[in-house]
Length: 281
Length: 315
Image (cartoon, rainbow over all chains, first blue to last red; front, side, top):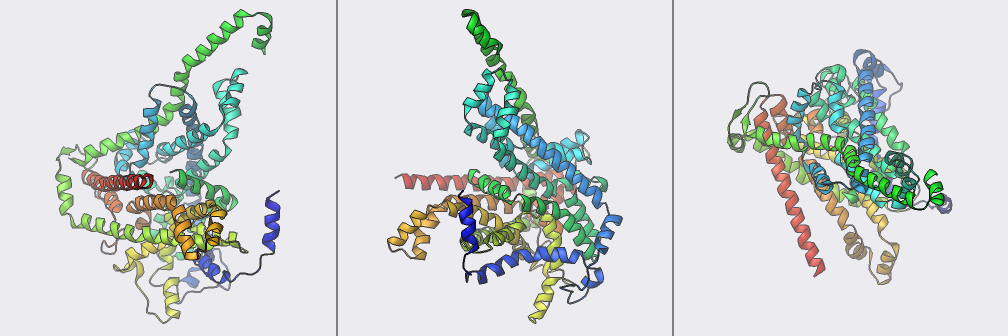
């Protein structure tokens, strides 16, 4: 009801002089990405000259062909997708279970345990990364996707976010289901989780973004190029093909596109998640 | 269903039964809770607290991660204080942070004020300002290595139009670090904008209108109404962006690998290099602890300042 009139009014907004400021600013942020897309469809001959071609007369797929045949980009894409998917699901499952226990169940030491888990949020990664590598080595996970998945499978952030969300839900609905003989897991799955959609969205979006975009940990934990993620593969590929910018940009677009699509499709969730995590954090 | 039916027929027995089932559920509560929490606790503490302690031990040892480690006490820390590369890394990190944090916050505030108006296409403008934030540091690094390529890059072509001689950019030791700040601003300002926009939209319009009725101009309204209302956002961004930029690594690795001539070697890059390139793990751990200690002091300092201010407000 309230959305409609606003939309109608917006259509009749008069031209504002602010556009002369807003448009150049927005272009400044958008242009590098436009250049990324454009140059990925150019040939090295079009790029490697001075001054470079700005608007190509013809578009080419040479870069993409090179990337698909002479590098492991499809494999890296698959690796990144597997890792991101498993990590997001892990954070949802363990975050919900842990968050629910901290929000609703009484058990000895729960406060201390929660404080301890939240305390790990402030430990900087460069402190933990060396022993974490050694632990993964002992577990035999180094150089496998498992090394990328296990340490991120659940974060204190996900547990805390779900806990806060569950605390804000009314207890009565759960107690009613409970009295009707629904098991604890059943109540959680059928009653609580469907009510927790905003928290599910926030945890999924932020976990996906962090996992997909990470470079530091894959760089440490992975040696074999068959197990690279897209970010690690891209960084390495660029290092080996310094002048073949067309192929490098094609690979770059492949690495960025999933996040861009996810962002444009769920922009509201992205922005609300980031803004809310900021205010709560 | 069954229980309800029995309640109707017999009076005493179901009450007792209900109690016992409640007791059973209560009794099982702690067990259930632990089974829910255990996976998270094992992963989070096992890969958080354990490595933290391990790292501290490591920082007191000489270790290459392969041969048995030797106890060296505080020698690693002593060596760090004389290591010119480490001192330079600390300096670079502080320059980077000192530039990035105020610029991103000021830029974010300015852009948020600019974008907080109802004009056509405002959604598009906001999207464009924010979109770089979701692009990974790796992809940014690769893209800007290309744009700032000293031979074929777009940046030198643009300078050429304005008859400015070509620059070395990432290959110039006097420019590389500042270029990293610039790129970090391109992608990082969007986050500040999102946080400030959320804050601006929470300011009740009555407040701003009341100020206008009282004769406050735009500057006065900002100074006395908007800026105080945005205070929590500013404090959050100050803390968050400082922690992030003191730990910058990915983009340095992709663009310059600490070069040219170590001009962009930041602390985390130094740690990574010592641990995984030179295999000087004990030394790397001590460098990481120096940075962590700095972060700790910083957060304690911020907490004290905040508490002091709260007291002032309460008085």
